[in-house]
Figure 1 (cartoon, rainbow, N blue to C red):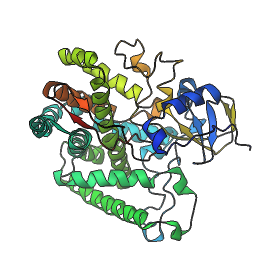
Figure 2 (cartoon, rainbow, N blue to C red):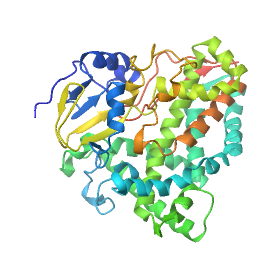
Figure 3 (cartoon, one colour):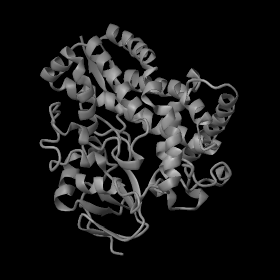
Figure 4 (tube, helix red, strand yellow):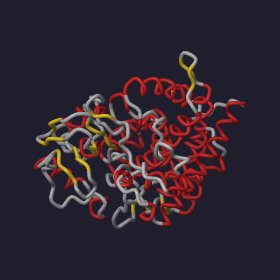
Length: 414
């Protein structure tokens, strides 16, 4: 099947488009809202209506097998019999198979379980801000947002505190390995030394998770891993492989994304002193800041789906089995749905209609935790840091198709 149309100049991993993808996305929405990107071998969907159609039709647009990482170096294939991202993980399940596993997993993220963590999260935010307040300057991404979310997700999962550094590294490793292009080649010689090292670290972490799961089975606690280990429906429990997959999902989805939401909220508030003062004076506005930030600069640009049949979408004909990059970052800045989409507007009537946490049966499992993390962190920054001024000349981002990964946020305050 002919893969047309194309979008001239589309380079999603270029430094320019990583820093500011919004003009390119706008051009796509106007010229060719669904286009084929030969650079990465996927169809790309940019308009809100088309993105929602995909997310709400899992029969036509399947989730299973959409992430890369099926190509594995020979020495690690025994550890990854069905690819790096296990078929037992939620993100690679569809239909009834997905629904049953998600019901089990959701029990680990019910609001009552998440809210118990609030006091510890508030204390952590204060501890991280103390040295920053004293200095009057620092990197709010790497000295606050990342440590806050990494230590929070580590505690939420029930991993030992010393695992926090490992969690950060494995998150990065998984994002690098799990790309669509990684599924194409089969020659072991094509792997770089860096890629092999990343596989090795993920293998070791999965082995570590196996030991943690075994310990939780013998001695339950309040963590998510323990909850997953002991959850059952009709007497059926999750396999160790499924739990490992779900834990890896939560690390990748709940660590990097929440940190970026926090950092971008501070960034956008700092650019509008009047808005900063309004929110600082009324912390009840912070939940709307969270929603508007997730809409304005979605921490997850979007994930992938695979067409289960030939389908027409946005003027393009997509063939059965082809991979689709569903850009909810673009959908959330579609002016057909959100007037003046690049403006932070806490009074939007449809502020909760964004798709920053996905939609449909694959909606983000950890959204409750992410929202609470963001609220606590933003409230603490507004309370402790006065008149934040971002000193970065231009925000820099790591090259990733799925996540928005801000590399630093240097700022002053006081």
